[in-house]
Image 1 (cartoon, rainbow, N blue to C red):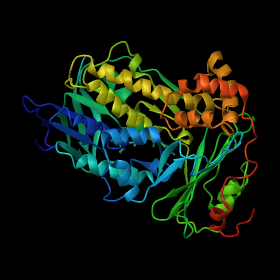
Image 2 (cartoon, rainbow, N blue to C red; image 1 turned 90 degrees about the vertical axis):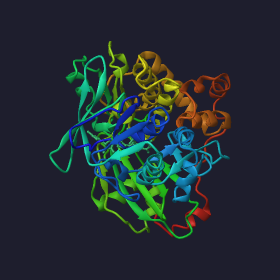
Image 3 (cartoon, protein in one colour; image 1 turned 60 degrees about the vertical axis):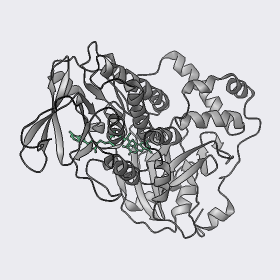
Image 4 (tube, rainbow, N blue to C red; image 1 turned 90 degrees about the horizontal axis):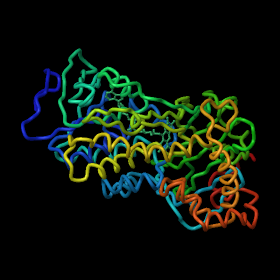
Length: 475
Ligand SMILES: Cc1cc2nc3c(=O)[nH]c(=O)nc-3n(C[C@H](O)[C@H](O)[C@H](O)COP(=O)(O)OP(=O)(O)OC[C@H]3O[C@@H](n4cnc5c(N)ncnc54)[C@H](O)[C@@H]3O)c2cc1C
């Protein structure tokens, strides 16, 4: 292959090339799938990738809590076997759900029952590093760092490649490809790029609860290697802004604490406001846990939390050779921890639809787009159905049927604190391990009708030994 900056890169006769725009979670996983089907995969990213688990400009959200749910971890594992062990070896925690969770839900503290599901807890930078190293070690995959995608080439019937430019120098070129995957994340210009090729506008929907995230990292106390993940959730039934916090044990003996608040109840970026905000939640547990802990960073704030979905799959025509995955397709309020799992499951959908077909097979791109939209749609319903209820939330109201189902869902949440069968199905759905329809299976409906039986535990489910690790914080 010729130099990326020297002009047009010619396609080798008789070989296929795929180009993936964006080297984040969706892009790297898509590249690993495509490497099985083409001779050459080129991943283009405008960032230069750090050598270790360090922050980079193109992934600002990595400063905040990034939990990978079981459904996403399994999808990654199916594409890159051994990844979960590698994460753990690098310092991530495999959190057994709900055993290692101390969670105050809308209806009380969830019991810490034996493992039903799991999640992976570490920094987002570590999650990406482990995936990236494995993907780039595969033959046939190359990364072009410091290279920005600026336009698609081809026409409304087929995308034939991408125009790129070097971010450090004023050089541009074209990479031709049988398949171009846009995995540029939240800032993706896919809809605009398609319009430039003559395609109609893509319908976009947003639901915005005005959520703000504020995150600070602390040194974890000695001996806290098995400390649970602690969450105080808001209660969307009460017509006040939703405010909550999560303490995530991360690699290198640290706790990452994210505080969040919807419109009217936002946290601030001032360090002196951080603990008082945590103390003002429905329970002060997280404030108590960090009261004596040494802060290792400033407070980082983001407002980049809107749910946004682009309905590419509904365009009347779709060009061959082009697919949009990950956040470029749909973004979710991060409080539900779904985005990376959806990215991974979409990459798995790409693999499944691709099957034995060539990446430029007629109709393939459209089938992949529809399949990825189905994956995103499941997470979308979960996140927006909840978010629209917060005061000041902006977006279309859900249909009447969905509003009626909400009453059922509320009762289900309450039942789950006392009924292990209902809890298991809820955990399956929340970790994106099962579809929402699992919540209307006969055994779940029966349990919900009967109700929880006994009330949830009155106080936090943290053990005295766990609490003792944190010293005598105020309460
Ligand atoms: C505050 C916050 C917290 C979150 N917490 C969670 C969580 O707990 N669990 C979870 O599952 N998800 C979470 N998410 C969502 C998660 O971050 C995304 O779903 C995930 O990053 C999507 O991966 P992606 O590959 O589509 O995009 P990204 O990871 O954003 O990657 C996009 C890549 O494209 C590159 N790029 C962009 N434009 C161009 C261009 N023009 N040319 C070349 N390269 C380009 C960028 O440099 C970047 O590398 C959170 C999101 C936010 C904002």
